Length: 251
Image (cartoon, rainbow, N blue to C red; front, side, top):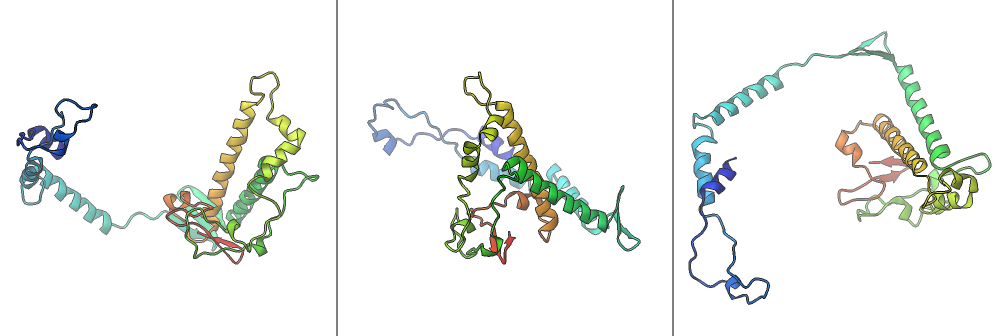
């Protein structure tokens, strides 16, 4: 608000009469005088208004708001919040209206992992007994955690040998299987593609990623904050990425 007010109160700079590079420009695209105007003394006006009512000791509404905010923060950081977690019978947890045991929590995690695995292999990778999904050689995966180049991931390490080309495997699997292709084809349409089937497939992809995020949050060691969890990428970014260590993923 103060900056906007300063811009409104300041006037355009007066022409000094000196020639500038813009004045000497003979471009055919700007034959007339420049219409650009720069604010005059805007910084001085903003500084004056800040000294009047935006700093402490000015006895202004801003001073009152700053004092009230400081008082509220003092109460917030010195008042013990009400507890919502309670343990009973050694292994039962009470949290507000939730009540479950550690065994139930473990069962939920195992069930979620099993459902996520089924969703990935059967519905997203079209696994079957006749055509199973290639196994991941976890023990032979290697990584170089010191390589911080953007785009680097453990699959690019020359020591890592995968049984198939992961970038084309799913595309080739769909192309080689008539039964899988038929799920996404719709004869009689201009494109020949069943858009609703494709959208349902992408919805399942989103569902799998949601389940995977929950599993990472609950089983990946120290729980991550939301922004940290959603920023994890399989390849390095300018902020870094994941690393493989002893067949485990560190992020």
